[in-house]
Each structure stands twice: as structure tokens, then as C-alpha cells.
Length: 211
Image (cartoon, rainbow, N blue to C red; front, side, top):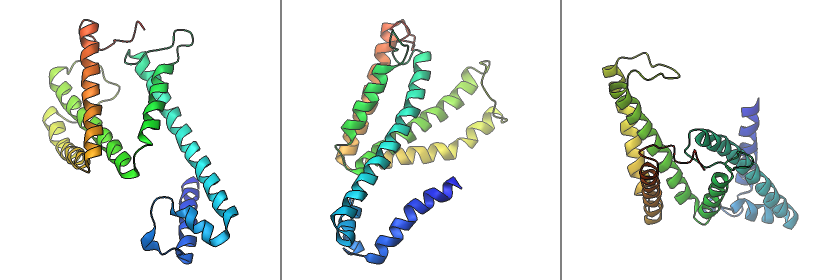
């Protein structure tokens, strides 16, 4: 039921503006809904679309920050993010996430999508490599769940997702110069932060447990 509501919310406005076709669909770009609403219903409909877009984006942002806040709390439990001494909430990490989101708003949608896909695919590739490597180097570690495959079969099963992930990483990295620079800075910053943690806490990655 909920999925059908989501589909209708996108499909009904799209069908309506396609039927109007003013301006012609070939000229549509990001933000064309407001121009179409202005031509169809005047300023009041244009304003209504702008307000609706604002609250829709606000809801998406709040949902994303809630999810990120939960992940940051887990990172703080593992010593990978600093906690606030008074409340225990990783406030600085949440504010940093907010600052990154505001900074990314300066770029166009294709650049944002490229950086997001790059980071997501790269994290998946790293997780695949870690899963296979730990099978061979630390088979005795307790795991929350077990994959019912032998070491060799697990390695073979991970080949296809690994190749797809590497392709996505390379493809998104080469979309444009801006995406390449942002992705490179992200990777370098992550490597530098990890090295600082390892050098500062005697080789342990739990560099924020004492913060």
C-alpha cells in the first residue's frame, strides 16, 4: 500500500505535466516543474509546487540524517567517531555530516550522484575484500552470521559483485573533473584520518574512545 502511494505521487504529476507539455518536454531541466506550474495555474500553483518541494526535500533530509545519526552512534560505540562528553551523542560527527551535505548542495545533481555512487560502490568493494580476506586470515573470529560456503566457493561467489563494484567506481570517477576531484579528496582524507588514528593510538583504530 505504501509503495503504491509513492508510485502515485511521482506518476500522477508526471502524467499531468506530460499532458500539458508547456514548455515542450525536450526543454525540461532540473526545476522545470515550477515553470510548468506557473504556465498552467499562475503564481499560486507555482508557489504551491515550490513549498511542496521544500517540505518534501526537508523530509528526505530528516530521514537521511536520522539514519546517519544511528550509524554515527554505532561508530562512536566502536571508537571511530567522537562522543559529546555531556550527553554521549556524537554531535560533532552529526554537524560534520550536515556541513558535508550543505557543501554538496553547491554542485549539480549529476556530480552529487556520481560522488554518492562512487562512495557506495567503493565501500561495497572494501567490504567484499574484507569478507574474503578475513575468511583466510582470521577464520576463528566470531561472526554475527555465517555464509554457508567454503573459502574457495565464497571467493568465486564474490568475483561478480567485486567486478561490478570496481566498474562502478571507475565509471563514476571519470564522469567529470569535479567528480574526480571530490572523490579523490574523499579517499585521501579517509586514508589520512586512518593513518592519524593508527599512529596516535598505538596501532588501534579506536582513536576516539577517550574523546
